[in-house]
Image 1 (cartoon, rainbow, N blue to C red):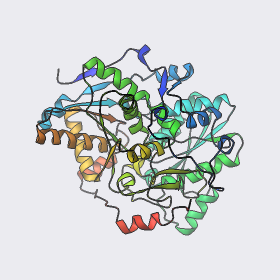
Image 2: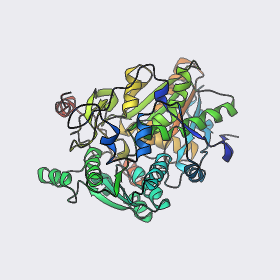
Image 3: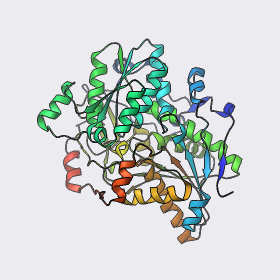
Length: 451
């Protein structure tokens, strides 16, 4: 066989999520109230999040049980397959072994339902009627729309305007699930209207879309806010990816030397990496983690580690994270899910502790890697996922140059079936690389809050 697939039986779906906070050698910095700048309390978060999600956000328990109602839905596509990319290895002529965890088999085509389903479930338990959220490329919006339909919740999605126009089929998928999708910035919120007043042609950002969704949730008692990345409980839910991968690699008689994940907010990266990192921190085998981000939004590689807001209107709590400044508006490159000014506090903390590496790669190299992967393995990656592909290919070529037979694992977090315009633009030579200028980064960072 050219490709080996490692599948687990249905009853092997994890029964618990893994919480890295239990094993960190240094506790994470406190989250601060956006107004008082003092440590935030659960009561402060109650207008936005379900109670159980707030508990998970601050928990330091190592294992948190997955509710049976959530597991029954996840079983529709989990456990997801782990593939050995033998054809890609051959094309690269590398001594490295390359594995990829394939999350594009979910109904919405990405890893995002892993957290959308439990977030919808916990909100339904509390009698919430409606969810307000944001989305970049549309992977999260479509996943939240799907989860809300399963629990009979209304879903309102603010989609970054440039992606709203670039990706009409993602928008159509949300609407098929019954969600309402609005281009952000919009005239439906105070924060959106302010942005449009200052810049009528604003292409939007995830920070702006978050402001709009948070504003709606905060002003309506029957509505709560859900986030698709960044927060601790979101990364917690995604650890089903890494837990499954550990079991599958055991079946294959292998263990990774390097794990690669693309990073925008940090959820799929944390999902694949944190169970392995936790094992390492508890005295297990060593593993190197590599976070790959776009050069056009270099949060980990050029941002500052500082307290910052998660949104433009400064409605969200202050968290310690790698950030380009909450006012940062990235260029309209096609990897919409990676166009966020900040990084998950836990991913930022792991980088600060020296437990992970970070690398920025240009858009054209990522698309070239995505095409090379598609020709070898037959799967069209989402533009976001091409960053992980590019990072894995770079690592495989390093192994070739150094004559090392390392094992590389990466998370292929979603398919690109609704992103084919990006590939059309690539083949027609319409895409270009964006290197975000240092002076623009300095300008964005000048607005960091004083804490």
